[in-house]
Structures are given as structure tokens and as C-alpha cells.
Length: 108
Image (cartoon, rainbow, N blue to C red; front, side):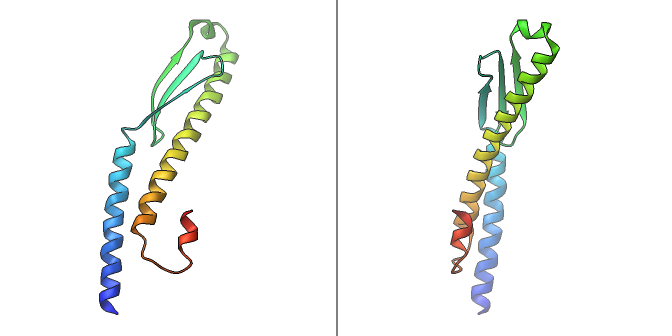
């Protein structure tokens, strides 16, 4: 019994380390998102850190339009990054979970 518990504890510790490694790796995964007309471009990491924003000059003349484009494009970029992050971390967590009947459906 204690062997099983010690084995599970070791597996959980290993999984925690893999999660941290994955989080660090996600800092290097860059995702690009653009406004529908291409006038705003955003680059973001899979950990949702904005790396760059590029704007076409005509947007600088219309503050309201610029704000709208930024909100829409940033929200799309954040949603994309969140999806990548959740998928990657769920895969690591599923890999490290002990085989407990009924628990496998939580990570599908």
C-alpha cells in the first residue's frame, strides 16, 4: 500500500516538474493574430504575454476605431493563446495522473 502511495507521490512530483517545464516552453511559443482587414497585428506568447502590436498609420487618426480594433484583436489573440496553453497543460497533467478509474474523463 505504501509503495503505491510513494509511487503516486513520485509521479505527482514528476508531473509538477513537467508542468513547470511546459509553462517555460510556452513562453517561447509565439502566436500571431490580425484584425479582419489586417490593420492591427498582435504577437502574443502561449502564456498570454503580448510581445508586439503593429498598427497601420490610418488608425492613428481615428481613436475610437483604433481602440475597437485593439480590443477585438487582443481578445482573439488571448483566446488563441489560452487554448494552446490549456491543451498543452492538460496533456502533461493527463500523462502524469495515476490510473484512477473514472478520472480519465476529466482530461478529454
